[in-house]
Image 1 (cartoon, rainbow over the protein chains, first blue to last red):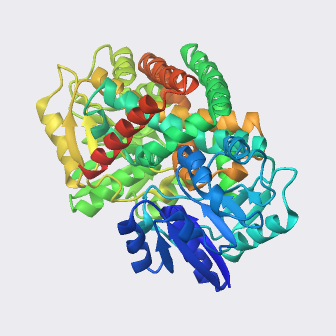
Image 2: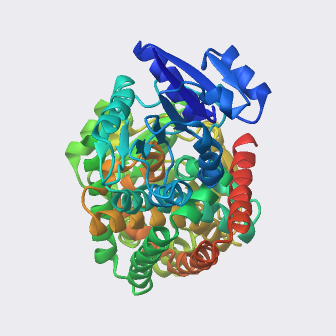
Length: 283
Length: 283
């Protein structure tokens, strides 16, 4: 039976564990973390079979290690596990940015381990912690793998099958393409939502009393975890800055059209946006 | 029995009519519009009691006129009804911007009619048309009245009672305050959502394939009616430009923090945003 150690049994790590159990794939899932209390809770909830706060013990005889801790903890986690894993052990992660993670792995291991397959499941919730873990979280969702050139094809296959077993759609691309795409479709919208909340509250307290349901949906992602999103900004800086600047140009263009009263051009832009979104939803 | 003529029996006009019927307030509701077909549909759906495409006929003997047409049609609508209404007839509207509407009314009537009570129900849907009309649309929602100084207090009372009868929370403020508030909480978010959709589709087709549920909610308001939002941009230009510029400053500030790798400051901004939103939701 495959033994998997999950480093960081929170929303994502816990959902992966539950998804694997749900899939019927026989696996012995061991949790590792700093807080024995939280790990005991995860075991109580049936998310993990066993746990340890001692890394050597947690990694004893494992076939796979899933790193599901915040991106900024990545270096210390790799340094922690390095002395205790054989070269055959498959390492994978769930980090929202991939280039920085590969860079860190190269720093810690000297080169990218052949059996380290970076992964990013495009799914989440605002809630955090193992209590919010959900075995169906990845069902029908995309999981992007960004293996490096030297990656072991068997390891890619094994990691893909784990995700597919819980209904995820696995896709493979290089890390730079991933980070560019996600900066556009995830990082930028989160930044705009956080930023608008800050602007409104700094600008006029009580303004939100006049916000309607559209605003509630628009700002939902501004309720995301601040630490995680700060980490993402730091680990995908170049792409994020590039797309903030690109967005700012679109906003400037629209702003000039509004200032000039170009109603027809404005309407066309809005129609384009509406069509793009409606088409996307109907796909 | 009070006779009300609704000019423009779409989502908002139709929802007002249904709300009034639901409230049990005895009223005879006549619809006016350009398309007899659409009006017949509204009557079929039980939204209006009667209709006419002849304005003189539609306004014969009315006590109140609700203007529920797009903001950019406002001038022509006022010119259309002017010859056919007595000074005692109460006029009210549902326009998303108020200063421009008062300005237009002054142009058409020479001065602001005492019985014209500008109103803005803060409620809506992405869908348009009378088919989407909903008698509960305004229940529990704010309706802002922006009467001018010369407004007839009895007219204010009557209009307030109409909205309150369908469960709306009526609030009175001046038109400039309204337009400033709504530019922040409604117009700016819509512009950001439209603009992000435009940026993503112009920048990389297919990028949306990697967007998750957070993006779906964030961009929902980008599916709003393009004509209506173009009109809003044109009729509240100064406030909208002011807040686009204010927002851009917040974005620039955040962008510099990201470029400088100031993770702690970024985290604090995001925490502030998260707290503001969570508090708002829990109010």
